[in-house]
Amino acid sequence: MNTEKLIEEISLTAREAGQIMLEAEDIRHTIKAKSGHANFVTAYDERVQEFLFDRLQKILPGAHFVGEEEGAEVFKPEYEKGYTFCIDPIDGTSNFLTGYRPSVISLALFLDGKNHVSVVYEPYHDLMFTAARGEGAFLNGKKLESSREPLARSLVSFGTSPYDPELMDRSFELCRKILPQCIDLRRSGSAVWDICQVAMGVTGMFFECRLRLWDFAAAALIVEEAGGRITDMEGQPLTMRGPSSVLCVSAGVAGEIRRF
Image 1: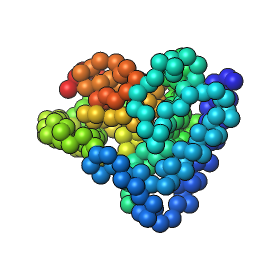
Image 2: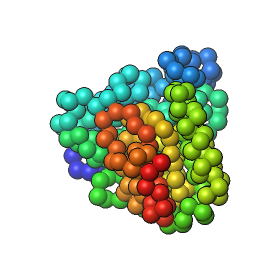
Image 3: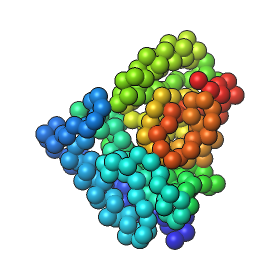
Image 4: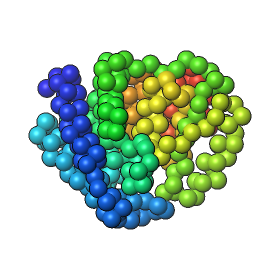
């Protein structure tokens, strides 16, 4: 299947899965706690993931799957060949269960271990982000370009790594460090959304001390194809094999910040 057809099929699947989120009711009554502080999963996370696994398997029979509600955090050796989907069925679950926005569906498709195609869907405003390696990034079909504004004229978003409380002090030390250098700080509660905001040119930077693979895999390709840069917080390339710190910057901020 060619790349254009892949993106079309995966985007359609994401939009259909988004309907499950839009029709959700009594979300708080479906909560299950997972390990870690304030780490929740709802019945809707599981329903969306099951739907995605089923539909995507039909698009690419034999593809491997890495999904948040599956529990696997690392890229297994067998995923190095052929197609592998890395899925976050609802990134921003805490937002989803409380009615705070945004929450998104995040789908990364790897080919022979490398990012190949990405789709991120925000159903509440029908926002479809897509990217294919070497072919640009798009929002509802319109090409994306990251901002060329310097840090001093940019908003910066961040994540608090809430499931890793030992990183709390580090997270807020970085906030205190960066706040005087930018317009202001923002926190949405969805790392995927925040990285896509850099791709859109809305913000100039996003950072978080620790994220799981499904939290950044899809959005990473989108921001790179939009002209931004994404690395770990030491400035090293993301391995795309498991958890990592993340530093994402726009084209305009890239020359100012190389590491944290």
